[in-house]
Image (cartoon, rainbow, N blue to C red):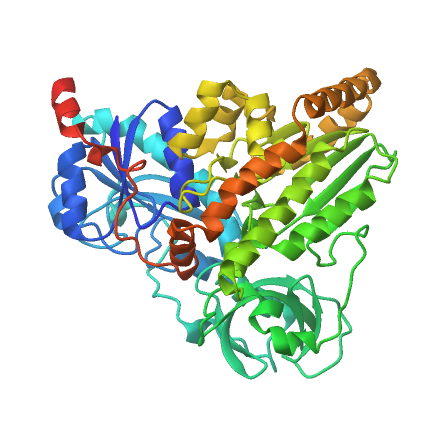
Length: 577
Protein backbone atom coordinates (compact mmCIF):
# COMPACT_ATOMS: atom_id res chain seq x y z
CA UNK A 1 0.00 0.00 0.00
CA UNK A 2 0.91 3.64 -0.26
CA UNK A 3 1.13 4.90 3.33
CA UNK A 4 1.66 8.49 4.41
CA UNK A 5 3.05 8.71 7.94
CA UNK A 6 1.79 11.93 9.54
CA UNK A 7 3.72 12.55 12.74
CA UNK A 8 4.85 15.27 15.14
CA UNK A 9 8.44 14.08 14.81
CA UNK A 10 10.45 11.11 13.59
CA UNK A 11 10.60 9.55 17.05
CA UNK A 12 11.55 5.99 18.00
CA UNK A 13 8.09 4.55 17.36
CA UNK A 14 7.78 6.29 14.01
CA UNK A 15 11.23 5.10 12.95
CA UNK A 16 10.41 1.50 13.87
CA UNK A 17 7.12 1.58 11.97
CA UNK A 18 8.78 3.21 8.95
CA UNK A 19 11.56 0.63 8.81
CA UNK A 20 9.26 -2.37 9.39
CA UNK A 21 6.58 -1.28 6.92
CA UNK A 22 9.18 -0.52 4.27
CA UNK A 23 10.56 -4.02 4.77
CA UNK A 24 7.01 -5.36 4.41
CA UNK A 25 6.93 -3.84 0.92
CA UNK A 26 4.76 -0.75 1.44
CA UNK A 27 5.51 2.56 -0.28
CA UNK A 28 6.09 5.13 2.46
CA UNK A 29 6.43 8.85 2.78
CA UNK A 30 6.55 11.03 5.89
CA UNK A 31 5.15 14.47 6.65
CA UNK A 32 5.68 16.30 9.92
CA UNK A 33 2.45 17.70 11.34
CA UNK A 34 3.32 21.38 11.10
CA UNK A 35 -0.03 22.86 10.12
CA UNK A 36 -3.22 21.77 8.37
CA UNK A 37 -2.30 23.18 4.97
CA UNK A 38 1.04 21.32 4.93
CA UNK A 39 -0.64 18.01 5.80
CA UNK A 40 -3.33 18.61 3.18
CA UNK A 41 -0.68 19.28 0.55
CA UNK A 42 1.18 16.09 1.50
CA UNK A 43 -1.99 14.02 1.13
CA UNK A 44 -2.71 15.59 -2.25
CA UNK A 45 0.83 14.91 -3.49
CA UNK A 46 1.20 11.36 -2.22
CA UNK A 47 -2.41 10.16 -2.66
CA UNK A 48 -2.06 7.56 0.10
CA UNK A 49 -4.18 4.48 0.64
CA UNK A 50 -3.77 5.03 4.38
CA UNK A 51 -2.67 7.94 6.53
CA UNK A 52 -0.91 6.53 9.60
CA UNK A 53 -0.46 8.77 12.66
CA UNK A 54 1.88 7.12 15.20
CA UNK A 55 2.73 10.27 17.21
CA UNK A 56 0.61 13.41 17.08
CA UNK A 57 0.07 16.25 19.52
CA UNK A 58 -3.09 17.57 17.88
CA UNK A 59 -6.06 16.26 15.92
CA UNK A 60 -5.93 15.37 12.23
CA UNK A 61 -7.97 18.01 10.34
CA UNK A 62 -11.42 17.06 9.11
CA UNK A 63 -10.36 17.94 5.58
CA UNK A 64 -8.15 14.83 5.70
CA UNK A 65 -9.92 12.26 7.92
CA UNK A 66 -13.28 12.81 6.23
CA UNK A 67 -11.79 11.89 2.82
CA UNK A 68 -9.04 9.39 3.68
CA UNK A 69 -8.59 6.42 5.96
CA UNK A 70 -6.58 7.77 8.91
CA UNK A 71 -5.36 5.37 11.60
CA UNK A 72 -4.09 6.79 14.89
CA UNK A 73 -1.87 4.96 17.39
CA UNK A 74 -3.05 5.58 20.96
CA UNK A 75 -0.76 4.28 23.76
CA UNK A 76 -3.65 3.18 25.95
CA UNK A 77 -6.07 0.30 26.43
CA UNK A 78 -9.45 0.15 24.70
CA UNK A 79 -11.65 2.95 26.02
CA UNK A 80 -8.74 5.00 27.33
CA UNK A 81 -8.84 8.60 26.18
CA UNK A 82 -6.60 11.58 26.78
CA UNK A 83 -3.09 12.84 26.05
CA UNK A 84 -1.40 11.33 29.14
CA UNK A 85 -2.38 7.68 28.79
CA UNK A 86 0.98 6.11 29.55
CA UNK A 87 1.82 8.71 32.21
CA UNK A 88 -1.25 7.75 34.25
CA UNK A 89 -0.64 4.04 33.74
CA UNK A 90 2.89 4.29 35.17
CA UNK A 91 1.97 6.68 37.98
CA UNK A 92 -0.99 4.56 39.12
CA UNK A 93 0.91 1.28 38.95
CA UNK A 94 -1.25 -0.44 36.34
CA UNK A 95 -0.39 -4.13 36.12
CA UNK A 96 -1.35 -4.29 32.45
CA UNK A 97 -1.61 -1.71 29.70
CA UNK A 98 -1.95 -1.64 25.94
CA UNK A 99 -2.18 0.10 22.59
CA UNK A 100 -5.29 0.86 20.55
CA UNK A 101 -5.35 1.71 16.85
CA UNK A 102 -8.24 4.07 16.13
CA UNK A 103 -9.76 5.55 13.00
CA UNK A 104 -9.61 9.34 13.20
CA UNK A 105 -12.89 11.20 13.45
CA UNK A 106 -14.20 14.46 14.90
CA UNK A 107 -13.41 13.51 18.51
CA UNK A 108 -9.93 12.76 19.88
CA UNK A 109 -9.35 9.08 20.76
CA UNK A 110 -13.02 8.26 20.08
CA UNK A 111 -12.86 6.70 16.62
CA UNK A 112 -13.68 3.16 15.57
CA UNK A 113 -11.20 0.55 16.80
CA UNK A 114 -9.21 -1.27 14.13
CA UNK A 115 -6.92 -3.25 16.45
CA UNK A 116 -5.67 -3.42 20.02
CA UNK A 117 -3.00 -5.22 22.04
CA UNK A 118 -2.31 -5.53 25.77
CA UNK A 119 0.95 -6.16 27.60
CA UNK A 120 2.14 -6.59 31.22
CA UNK A 121 3.75 -3.52 32.73
CA UNK A 122 7.33 -3.41 33.98
CA UNK A 123 8.78 -1.26 36.75
CA UNK A 124 10.28 1.11 34.22
CA UNK A 125 10.12 4.65 32.91
CA UNK A 126 7.42 5.84 30.57
CA UNK A 127 10.07 6.27 27.86
CA UNK A 128 11.31 2.69 28.31
CA UNK A 129 7.80 1.24 28.09
CA UNK A 130 7.10 3.39 25.04
CA UNK A 131 10.20 2.25 23.18
CA UNK A 132 9.66 -1.41 23.95
CA UNK A 133 6.16 -2.66 24.84
CA UNK A 134 4.19 0.19 23.26
CA UNK A 135 6.22 0.05 20.06
CA UNK A 136 5.88 -3.74 19.72
CA UNK A 137 2.13 -3.56 20.36
CA UNK A 138 1.70 -0.65 17.94
CA UNK A 139 3.52 -2.52 15.17
CA UNK A 140 1.30 -5.58 15.68
CA UNK A 141 -1.83 -3.39 15.61
CA UNK A 142 -0.76 -1.58 12.44
CA UNK A 143 0.02 -4.81 10.60
CA UNK A 144 -3.32 -6.31 11.65
CA UNK A 145 -5.19 -3.21 10.51
CA UNK A 146 -3.44 -2.96 7.15
CA UNK A 147 -4.38 -6.57 6.45
CA UNK A 148 -8.05 -5.59 6.97
CA UNK A 149 -8.05 -2.57 4.65
CA UNK A 150 -9.08 -4.46 1.46
CA UNK A 151 -12.00 -6.13 3.25
CA UNK A 152 -13.01 -2.80 4.79
CA UNK A 153 -13.06 -1.14 1.38
CA UNK A 154 -15.20 -3.99 0.00
CA UNK A 155 -17.63 -3.73 2.91
CA UNK A 156 -16.77 -7.23 4.13
CA UNK A 157 -15.31 -6.04 7.44
CA UNK A 158 -15.86 -3.11 9.75
CA UNK A 159 -13.94 -1.77 12.74
CA UNK A 160 -15.57 -1.79 16.17
CA UNK A 161 -17.22 1.46 17.26
CA UNK A 162 -15.85 2.65 20.59
CA UNK A 163 -19.32 2.49 22.15
CA UNK A 164 -19.51 -1.23 21.33
CA UNK A 165 -16.00 -2.11 22.47
CA UNK A 166 -15.44 -4.06 25.66
CA UNK A 167 -12.73 -1.98 27.26
CA UNK A 168 -11.72 -0.95 30.77
CA UNK A 169 -10.25 2.39 29.85
CA UNK A 170 -11.69 5.76 30.71
CA UNK A 171 -11.26 9.35 29.70
CA UNK A 172 -8.52 11.04 31.70
CA UNK A 173 -7.19 14.58 31.60
CA UNK A 174 -3.75 15.85 30.70
CA UNK A 175 -1.44 15.04 33.61
CA UNK A 176 -0.26 18.33 35.05
CA UNK A 177 2.66 19.14 37.30
CA UNK A 178 0.30 19.32 40.28
CA UNK A 179 -0.44 15.64 39.65
CA UNK A 180 3.24 14.81 39.44
CA UNK A 181 4.48 16.84 42.42
CA UNK A 182 6.74 15.08 44.93
CA UNK A 183 6.15 15.62 48.64
CA UNK A 184 9.58 14.77 49.95
CA UNK A 185 8.35 14.82 53.56
CA UNK A 186 5.71 12.15 52.84
CA UNK A 187 6.44 10.21 49.63
CA UNK A 188 8.41 7.01 50.05
CA UNK A 189 11.07 5.89 47.59
CA UNK A 190 8.66 3.83 45.49
CA UNK A 191 6.33 6.80 45.11
CA UNK A 192 9.13 9.18 44.16
CA UNK A 193 10.40 6.71 41.56
CA UNK A 194 6.92 6.20 40.11
CA UNK A 195 6.32 9.93 39.75
CA UNK A 196 9.62 10.61 38.00
CA UNK A 197 9.33 7.49 35.83
CA UNK A 198 5.86 8.60 34.70
CA UNK A 199 7.38 11.88 33.44
CA UNK A 200 10.54 10.53 31.82
CA UNK A 201 11.71 11.64 29.24
CA UNK A 202 9.01 14.38 28.92
CA UNK A 203 8.05 16.63 30.67
CA UNK A 204 9.95 15.66 33.83
CA UNK A 205 8.77 16.43 37.35
CA UNK A 206 8.80 20.07 38.44
CA UNK A 207 10.81 20.34 41.65
CA UNK A 208 13.69 22.24 43.19
CA UNK A 209 17.37 21.36 43.54
CA UNK A 210 19.57 23.48 45.78
CA UNK A 211 16.66 25.92 46.06
CA UNK A 212 16.34 26.45 42.29
CA UNK A 213 13.39 25.47 40.09
CA UNK A 214 14.05 22.56 37.73
CA UNK A 215 12.57 19.40 36.25
CA UNK A 216 13.79 15.96 37.33
CA UNK A 217 14.44 12.93 35.12
CA UNK A 218 16.20 9.58 35.17
CA UNK A 219 15.58 8.35 38.73
CA UNK A 220 17.07 5.16 40.19
CA UNK A 221 16.76 3.50 43.62
CA UNK A 222 19.46 4.58 46.03
CA UNK A 223 20.88 2.80 49.07
CA UNK A 224 18.81 2.30 52.21
CA UNK A 225 19.83 3.73 55.57
CA UNK A 226 20.79 7.16 54.22
CA UNK A 227 20.25 9.76 56.92
CA UNK A 228 19.25 13.37 56.43
CA UNK A 229 16.24 15.56 55.79
CA UNK A 230 14.01 14.14 53.05
CA UNK A 231 14.77 15.86 49.77
CA UNK A 232 18.31 16.78 50.81
CA UNK A 233 21.16 16.20 48.33
CA UNK A 234 23.88 14.15 50.01
CA UNK A 235 26.21 12.62 47.37
CA UNK A 236 27.10 12.39 43.67
CA UNK A 237 28.08 9.62 41.26
CA UNK A 238 28.40 9.35 37.47
CA UNK A 239 26.60 12.65 36.92
CA UNK A 240 23.75 11.79 39.30
CA UNK A 241 22.83 13.33 42.66
CA UNK A 242 21.67 11.25 45.63
CA UNK A 243 18.59 12.61 47.43
CA UNK A 244 17.20 11.42 50.74
CA UNK A 245 13.65 10.00 50.92
CA UNK A 246 11.57 9.20 53.98
CA UNK A 247 12.61 5.53 53.76
CA UNK A 248 15.86 5.55 51.81
CA UNK A 249 17.19 7.49 48.83
CA UNK A 250 17.02 7.98 45.07
CA UNK A 251 19.60 8.88 42.47
CA UNK A 252 18.50 11.76 40.21
CA UNK A 253 20.41 11.27 36.98
CA UNK A 254 19.29 14.28 34.95
CA UNK A 255 17.74 17.67 35.49
CA UNK A 256 16.62 20.64 33.43
CA UNK A 257 16.85 24.09 34.95
CA UNK A 258 13.81 26.27 34.35
CA UNK A 259 15.72 29.50 33.82
CA UNK A 260 19.02 30.44 32.26
CA UNK A 261 20.88 29.70 29.05
CA UNK A 262 21.17 26.00 29.88
CA UNK A 263 17.43 25.34 30.24
CA UNK A 264 17.74 21.89 28.68
CA UNK A 265 18.31 18.41 30.05
CA UNK A 266 21.77 17.70 31.49
CA UNK A 267 23.30 15.28 33.98
CA UNK A 268 22.24 16.58 37.37
CA UNK A 269 25.80 17.29 38.50
CA UNK A 270 26.34 19.42 35.39
CA UNK A 271 22.99 21.22 35.50
CA UNK A 272 24.00 22.28 39.04
CA UNK A 273 27.75 22.05 38.67
CA UNK A 274 28.82 24.48 41.40
CA UNK A 275 26.48 23.05 44.05
CA UNK A 276 27.14 19.42 43.13
CA UNK A 277 30.89 19.89 43.35
CA UNK A 278 30.50 20.42 47.10
CA UNK A 279 28.84 17.00 47.55
CA UNK A 280 30.97 13.98 48.47
CA UNK A 281 31.69 11.51 45.68
CA UNK A 282 30.16 8.09 46.39
CA UNK A 283 32.02 5.77 44.00
CA UNK A 284 30.91 2.28 43.11
CA UNK A 285 32.96 -0.75 42.11
CA UNK A 286 32.97 -1.74 38.44
CA UNK A 287 32.49 -5.39 39.39
CA UNK A 288 29.46 -5.54 41.69
CA UNK A 289 26.08 -7.13 42.27
CA UNK A 290 22.84 -6.05 40.61
CA UNK A 291 20.86 -3.20 42.09
CA UNK A 292 23.55 -0.63 42.85
CA UNK A 293 23.25 2.36 40.51
CA UNK A 294 26.13 3.22 38.23
CA UNK A 295 26.64 3.81 34.52
CA UNK A 296 29.24 1.05 34.17
CA UNK A 297 29.16 -2.51 35.50
CA UNK A 298 31.22 -5.60 34.79
CA UNK A 299 30.42 -9.24 35.56
CA UNK A 300 31.77 -12.64 34.58
CA UNK A 301 30.26 -16.04 33.97
CA UNK A 302 30.76 -18.66 36.66
CA UNK A 303 33.50 -20.38 34.66
CA UNK A 304 35.28 -17.06 34.06
CA UNK A 305 35.29 -17.44 30.29
CA UNK A 306 32.80 -14.69 29.43
CA UNK A 307 32.98 -11.13 30.69
CA UNK A 308 30.15 -8.64 30.19
CA UNK A 309 30.72 -4.90 30.37
CA UNK A 310 27.51 -2.88 30.61
CA UNK A 311 27.41 0.84 29.89
CA UNK A 312 23.95 2.33 30.40
CA UNK A 313 24.21 5.96 29.31
CA UNK A 314 20.98 7.97 29.42
CA UNK A 315 19.43 8.17 25.93
CA UNK A 316 22.61 6.60 24.58
CA UNK A 317 24.53 9.89 24.68
CA UNK A 318 28.21 9.53 25.54
CA UNK A 319 29.97 12.63 26.83
CA UNK A 320 33.72 13.08 26.98
CA UNK A 321 34.03 11.99 30.61
CA UNK A 322 31.77 8.97 30.01
CA UNK A 323 33.88 7.88 27.04
CA UNK A 324 37.03 8.17 29.12
CA UNK A 325 35.50 6.09 31.92
CA UNK A 326 34.39 3.47 29.39
CA UNK A 327 37.85 3.38 27.83
CA UNK A 328 39.40 2.89 31.29
CA UNK A 329 36.90 0.12 32.01
CA UNK A 330 37.78 -1.66 28.77
CA UNK A 331 41.45 -1.47 29.68
CA UNK A 332 40.68 -2.85 33.15
CA UNK A 333 38.56 -5.80 31.98
CA UNK A 334 41.08 -6.58 29.23
CA UNK A 335 43.39 -7.70 32.03
CA UNK A 336 40.88 -10.35 33.07
CA UNK A 337 41.47 -13.92 31.74
CA UNK A 338 38.25 -14.13 29.73
CA UNK A 339 37.92 -15.60 26.25
CA UNK A 340 34.87 -13.53 25.20
CA UNK A 341 34.06 -9.94 26.11
CA UNK A 342 30.43 -8.89 25.63
CA UNK A 343 29.82 -5.16 25.46
CA UNK A 344 26.24 -4.51 26.45
CA UNK A 345 24.91 -0.99 26.17
CA UNK A 346 21.84 0.18 28.02
CA UNK A 347 18.45 -1.54 27.74
CA UNK A 348 17.02 1.35 25.69
CA UNK A 349 20.06 2.45 23.70
CA UNK A 350 23.35 0.83 22.83
CA UNK A 351 24.85 4.22 22.02
CA UNK A 352 23.95 7.33 20.04
CA UNK A 353 27.44 8.76 19.89
CA UNK A 354 28.62 12.13 21.17
CA UNK A 355 26.62 13.98 23.83
CA UNK A 356 24.96 16.92 22.08
CA UNK A 357 23.41 18.42 25.23
CA UNK A 358 26.74 18.53 27.03
CA UNK A 359 28.35 20.05 23.95
CA UNK A 360 25.65 22.73 23.78
CA UNK A 361 26.25 23.56 27.47
CA UNK A 362 30.02 23.94 27.09
CA UNK A 363 31.81 27.28 27.01
CA UNK A 364 33.07 26.35 23.55
CA UNK A 365 30.81 23.95 21.67
CA UNK A 366 33.51 23.42 19.03
CA UNK A 367 36.17 22.51 21.61
CA UNK A 368 33.84 20.17 23.48
CA UNK A 369 32.79 18.53 20.21
CA UNK A 370 36.44 17.96 19.40
CA UNK A 371 37.22 16.49 22.83
CA UNK A 372 34.12 14.30 22.70
CA UNK A 373 34.77 12.83 19.26
CA UNK A 374 38.38 12.10 20.17
CA UNK A 375 37.24 10.35 23.34
CA UNK A 376 34.76 8.29 21.28
CA UNK A 377 37.56 7.39 18.88
CA UNK A 378 39.69 6.24 21.81
CA UNK A 379 36.96 3.81 22.88
CA UNK A 380 36.62 2.45 19.35
CA UNK A 381 40.36 2.06 19.00
CA UNK A 382 40.59 0.16 22.28
CA UNK A 383 38.07 -2.37 20.95
CA UNK A 384 39.66 -2.67 17.53
CA UNK A 385 43.08 -3.36 19.06
CA UNK A 386 41.75 -5.92 21.57
CA UNK A 387 42.91 -9.00 19.66
CA UNK A 388 43.41 -11.58 22.43
CA UNK A 389 39.69 -12.38 22.85
CA UNK A 390 36.47 -12.26 20.84
CA UNK A 391 34.48 -9.08 21.38
CA UNK A 392 30.70 -8.97 20.95
CA UNK A 393 28.54 -5.86 20.74
CA UNK A 394 25.19 -6.92 22.22
CA UNK A 395 22.57 -4.39 21.16
CA UNK A 396 19.75 -4.52 23.69
CA UNK A 397 18.52 -1.15 22.43
CA UNK A 398 18.75 1.20 19.48
CA UNK A 399 21.96 2.65 18.09
CA UNK A 400 22.61 5.75 16.04
CA UNK A 401 25.42 7.67 14.34
CA UNK A 402 28.75 7.07 16.09
CA UNK A 403 27.09 4.54 18.36
CA UNK A 404 26.53 2.23 15.37
CA UNK A 405 30.20 2.35 14.47
CA UNK A 406 31.24 1.83 18.07
CA UNK A 407 29.31 -1.46 17.79
CA UNK A 408 31.07 -2.31 14.52
CA UNK A 409 34.40 -1.96 16.32
CA UNK A 410 33.61 -5.31 17.97
CA UNK A 411 34.21 -8.60 16.18
CA UNK A 412 30.55 -9.58 16.26
CA UNK A 413 27.37 -7.50 16.45
CA UNK A 414 24.23 -9.15 17.83
CA UNK A 415 20.79 -7.58 18.25
CA UNK A 416 17.15 -8.51 18.75
CA UNK A 417 14.56 -7.88 16.02
CA UNK A 418 13.19 -4.73 17.65
CA UNK A 419 16.48 -2.81 17.52
CA UNK A 420 16.58 0.17 15.16
CA UNK A 421 19.90 1.35 13.74
CA UNK A 422 20.67 4.72 12.16
CA UNK A 423 24.21 4.20 10.79
CA UNK A 424 24.71 7.69 9.37
CA UNK A 425 25.71 11.17 10.49
CA UNK A 426 24.37 13.67 7.96
CA UNK A 427 21.10 14.37 9.77
CA UNK A 428 23.12 16.32 12.33
CA UNK A 429 24.12 19.22 10.11
CA UNK A 430 26.01 17.15 7.54
CA UNK A 431 28.52 15.78 10.02
CA UNK A 432 31.13 13.65 8.30
CA UNK A 433 31.56 11.33 11.28
CA UNK A 434 34.51 9.53 12.84
CA UNK A 435 34.70 6.43 15.08
CA UNK A 436 36.81 4.80 12.34
CA UNK A 437 33.72 4.30 10.19
CA UNK A 438 35.73 4.62 6.98
CA UNK A 439 37.69 1.55 8.15
CA UNK A 440 34.89 -0.43 9.79
CA UNK A 441 32.02 -0.08 7.32
CA UNK A 442 33.88 -1.33 4.21
CA UNK A 443 34.85 -4.48 6.13
CA UNK A 444 31.15 -5.36 6.30
CA UNK A 445 29.42 -3.89 3.26
CA UNK A 446 30.28 -3.62 -0.44
CA UNK A 447 31.10 -0.07 -1.50
CA UNK A 448 27.76 0.52 -3.25
CA UNK A 449 25.71 -0.70 -0.27
CA UNK A 450 27.85 1.24 2.21
CA UNK A 451 27.39 4.45 0.22
CA UNK A 452 23.65 3.86 0.04
CA UNK A 453 23.30 3.25 3.78
CA UNK A 454 25.17 6.46 4.58
CA UNK A 455 23.35 8.55 1.97
CA UNK A 456 19.78 7.30 2.51
CA UNK A 457 19.74 8.44 6.14
CA UNK A 458 16.89 6.06 6.92
CA UNK A 459 16.50 3.73 9.91
CA UNK A 460 17.20 0.03 9.59
CA UNK A 461 15.60 -2.65 11.75
CA UNK A 462 17.99 -5.32 12.94
CA UNK A 463 16.64 -8.08 10.63
CA UNK A 464 17.31 -5.86 7.62
CA UNK A 465 20.74 -4.95 8.97
CA UNK A 466 21.45 -8.66 9.26
CA UNK A 467 20.28 -9.33 5.70
CA UNK A 468 22.72 -6.82 4.23
CA UNK A 469 25.59 -7.90 6.50
CA UNK A 470 25.81 -4.82 8.70
CA UNK A 471 25.35 -6.97 11.81
CA UNK A 472 26.09 -10.65 12.38
CA UNK A 473 23.05 -12.08 14.17
CA UNK A 474 19.50 -11.17 15.07
CA UNK A 475 17.75 -13.37 17.61
CA UNK A 476 15.56 -13.52 20.69
CA UNK A 477 12.18 -12.35 19.43
CA UNK A 478 12.20 -9.34 21.76
CA UNK A 479 14.43 -7.61 24.30
CA UNK A 480 13.73 -10.13 27.08
CA UNK A 481 14.28 -13.11 24.80
CA UNK A 482 17.51 -11.58 23.51
CA UNK A 483 19.00 -11.25 26.98
CA UNK A 484 18.07 -14.84 27.81
CA UNK A 485 19.70 -16.19 24.65
CA UNK A 486 22.70 -13.85 24.85
CA UNK A 487 24.41 -15.65 27.72
CA UNK A 488 24.03 -19.04 26.02
CA UNK A 489 25.43 -17.76 22.74
CA UNK A 490 28.38 -16.08 24.44
CA UNK A 491 29.12 -19.27 26.41
CA UNK A 492 28.99 -21.34 23.21
CA UNK A 493 31.39 -18.91 21.59
CA UNK A 494 33.81 -19.23 24.51
CA UNK A 495 33.62 -23.04 24.29
CA UNK A 496 34.26 -23.13 20.54
CA UNK A 497 37.22 -25.52 19.98
CA UNK A 498 38.31 -23.34 17.06
CA UNK A 499 38.50 -20.20 19.21
CA UNK A 500 42.31 -20.20 19.39
CA UNK A 501 42.66 -20.31 15.61
CA UNK A 502 39.96 -17.70 15.30
CA UNK A 503 41.90 -15.36 17.55
CA UNK A 504 45.10 -16.01 15.60
CA UNK A 505 43.31 -15.09 12.38
CA UNK A 506 41.90 -11.97 14.03
CA UNK A 507 45.35 -10.82 15.18
CA UNK A 508 46.82 -11.57 11.76
CA UNK A 509 44.14 -9.57 9.97
CA UNK A 510 44.63 -6.62 12.33
CA UNK A 511 48.37 -6.70 11.64
CA UNK A 512 47.77 -6.88 7.89
CA UNK A 513 45.27 -4.02 7.99
CA UNK A 514 47.66 -1.93 10.05
CA UNK A 515 50.46 -2.54 7.58
CA UNK A 516 48.27 -1.61 4.62
CA UNK A 517 46.96 1.54 6.27
CA UNK A 518 47.41 2.41 9.95
CA UNK A 519 44.37 3.16 12.09
CA UNK A 520 45.94 6.54 12.77
CA UNK A 521 45.56 7.43 9.09
CA UNK A 522 41.83 6.68 9.09
CA UNK A 523 41.41 8.72 12.25
CA UNK A 524 43.44 11.63 10.89
CA UNK A 525 41.38 11.81 7.69
CA UNK A 526 38.03 11.56 9.50
CA UNK A 527 38.98 14.16 12.07
CA UNK A 528 40.18 16.55 9.40
CA UNK A 529 36.62 16.51 8.02
CA UNK A 530 35.16 16.77 11.51
CA UNK A 531 37.36 19.76 12.31
CA UNK A 532 35.73 21.59 9.41
CA UNK A 533 32.30 20.66 10.83
CA UNK A 534 33.27 21.99 14.24
CA UNK A 535 35.46 24.98 13.40
CA UNK A 536 34.81 25.74 9.72
CA UNK A 537 32.79 28.42 8.00
CA UNK A 538 29.68 26.24 7.55
CA UNK A 539 27.60 26.44 10.79
CA UNK A 540 25.20 23.62 9.81
CA UNK A 541 26.28 21.27 12.59
CA UNK A 542 26.02 23.94 15.28
CA UNK A 543 22.61 25.08 14.04
CA UNK A 544 21.28 21.50 13.84
CA UNK A 545 22.63 20.68 17.30
CA UNK A 546 21.05 23.81 18.81
CA UNK A 547 17.64 22.96 17.37
CA UNK A 548 17.96 19.32 18.49
CA UNK A 549 18.86 20.24 22.06
CA UNK A 550 16.30 23.04 22.25
CA UNK A 551 13.54 20.79 20.87
CA UNK A 552 12.67 23.45 18.31
CA UNK A 553 9.34 22.63 16.63
CA UNK A 554 9.73 21.24 13.13
CA UNK A 555 9.32 23.84 10.38
CA UNK A 556 9.65 21.42 7.43
CA UNK A 557 10.04 17.72 6.70
CA UNK A 558 13.49 16.57 5.51
CA UNK A 559 13.40 15.51 1.87
CA UNK A 560 14.83 12.05 2.53
CA UNK A 561 11.63 11.35 4.51
CA UNK A 562 9.11 13.31 2.42
CA UNK A 563 9.32 11.33 -0.83
CA UNK A 564 6.23 13.11 -2.13
CA UNK A 565 8.18 16.38 -2.19
CA UNK A 566 10.95 15.11 -4.45
CA UNK A 567 11.23 16.89 -7.77
CA UNK A 568 9.30 14.98 -10.38
CA UNK A 569 7.30 12.96 -7.85
CA UNK A 570 3.95 14.08 -9.26
CA UNK A 571 5.00 13.01 -12.77
CA UNK A 572 6.15 9.58 -11.55
CA UNK A 573 2.92 9.11 -9.58
CA UNK A 574 0.84 9.98 -12.64
CA UNK A 575 2.83 7.61 -14.85
CA UNK A 576 2.43 4.78 -12.33
CA UNK A 577 -1.33 5.36 -12.19
